Image (cartoon, rainbow, N blue to C red; front, top):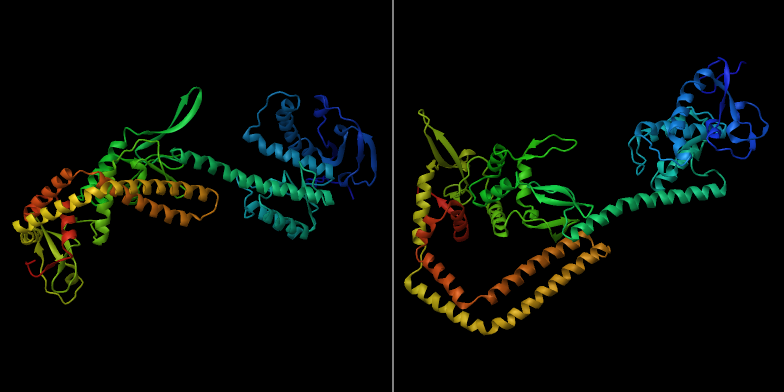
Length: 555
């Protein structure tokens, strides 16, 4: 039977192929002669004597293979590796990496006297998981074929990055009758080879885990010092500065988007804007999500605005792994405005108010006196285009047994405002309150100093607890859930302590001035209500009344 090419099966003229290219000896690698054993490719079972390694050849390779793809691999290997071997600077381009890897695997196969029958490459896939398409295809291939002797890998860490996957893959390979061989590590079926394999697999697992944890350590430390982990939110820009020859990554205010973010908070704090209206207006004003490498610039969505309105980064805090730190970046929003925004969101949620289309400060506060249902808003238009806003009973709209008719919104506003005229304090009651407040203030003034010292100590203790909690979290002594709950508790208690400190530090004259202003307003609650803007009216209604019941056109 005529000999054929072991790679392509061709019966054309066969040639000899150097195991290691003879170009290596021409650049100074004249190694000592070594015994050369005949492998399966030479189809002879005897030793071929002692010769330099770069003169070793295998037979039974056709001219097309030898002078075709094999020659192309040698050309790339010679061009890329020569500068590195002789001690010059070189660069491995991305386009050459696959060719160099194939050249290394081919040389390893030739040294083993084996033929490469299939190649599997998981391009841009991490070895952290065994669920890789080409790896699974390779395991299926050797299992079905059943005659594969070797599975050659570049390195152990290219195969698996954790011991469990490494063991499972090795068991699958051995079950198929093959063994693993590394091009760069002395791994075989000997006891020492198996030991080395286990050590290298453990090192690969450690390297992967350590590689993942090191960036987290740096990011955590950056957050602790007030830096911004990751991309800054809208209104800021991630910038790079060079200071004393070093590149420093920091955050700066975005002069184009920051004013829109500030307007967004101020507008929503008034209570006049719904979330969807605010989103539409911001898009109209040109606020966009910046383009990234994968996504083009795109408009804001409702969810983006909702997240920004609760993001404490805008008042000077950074958060990482559930822990909040004081940030070094400038705050765009003052705390008072931010808290006002949260109050508006809370008020709307408490009233279960749905304000997507027709917002009104009475929605969520007025109820039908017949069916106890809520009122919604509708805009009726006559044939001349004039719009009449009405409140209508949602219970009746759902075809329940309710006879409540629609009511002009202006009429309900007037009726509610008139109802406030019943809420006022008499002169005698105001005088009694003033005297009681003054007596209480004088009595407490003597104890304020001791209370102030106690609250200062309390604040310091809470701040120390906060630091210890963070240290315990870094030491894995407590869970993230426990940390968050404790941080919430400490934040509440710190606010309480600060409130007590402010109260104890306030002079009686300042307190009485505020009391007099409050009493003056309470003396005419009706005037207070009429002078209040819609968002304040909403809060006054929810603070004083549980519900307004509407019967026909009466409150």
